[in-house]
Length: 335
Ligand SMILES: Nc1nc2c(c(=O)[nH]1)N[C@H]1C(S)=C(S)[C@@H](COP(=O)(O)O)O[C@H]1N2
Ligand SMILES: [Mo]
Image 1 (tube, rainbow, N blue to C red):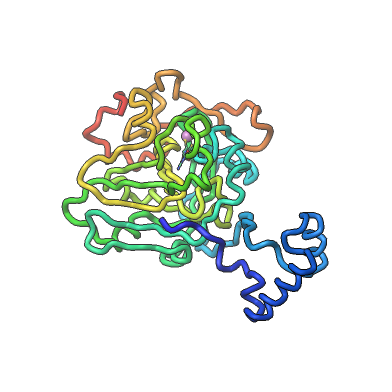
Image 2: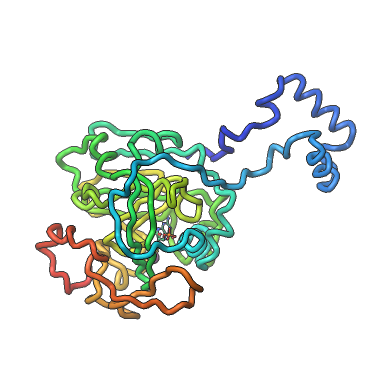
């Protein structure tokens, strides 16, 4: 992975000013004591329009509006989870295990440039750069339930495209049976990858997998946005998986690699606790987690996070059209 640097859209002084003028102005400012001077002095000079922010400063994330087709391809009548909750109550252990940690710790996560590679058992490997993530495939909106294995859920309007479209372009070989996904590994940016305690004991990078037929199912999407704008870092910017009939941990964030294979790939939560998290992880109210029931869930809507809003969990999270893929599996068994 190339080391991330700042978005190219962020104009720097040397982008807008002739190189020599820029250098001269810098040495002038330096001789006046502004560069390398106290922050207060530097800030007042900056505020007065003397020079731009220091080059080493990180660019805080800002959501950009996306263009996508309307009306939503998949709609449900349930109330959407308000945007402020979707982007502030998260699981993204690379940025810490507390629900509010990702929103706090990922504010400067650099997602542009980005490289997503699709390779393995394919005839045409693909690399998508940051721009291609939102331009290569027509974007559409889909409003899906997200059911976390911890028994809370949300209703989220995603923006993205079908994973099947991407896989078809790569032209899988007959031998491909599974799809393996990998999140960015960058301990410099992800504090949870620097500390076993902060990262919840996970061996990074976070990895996930699907059977090829699951990956090709029309419900399976690659999301690049939510609520009509590019994904905030805490939700898996710049691109993440969304598999609405499976527990949330399958929906891997900030993906850098998608590899087609002939073997069932290892998955992060299964590796960490095989007795608690399976490869399939289909939402099922009749199969309890070893430590709690999965029969119901706390739906996060309006009102405080402690608002009682307990609803019954549905088989396949309500997406029963996927059932034929599991005809030969005993659904009362844990997988
Ligand atoms: N890389 C990575 N992907 C991840 C996770 C994570 O910790 N790291 N958490 C998963 C879990 S447990 C859930 S419930 C969803 C949460 O997605 P959201 O924060 O956008 O609601 O992301 C999933 N994807
Ligand atoms: Mo989850």
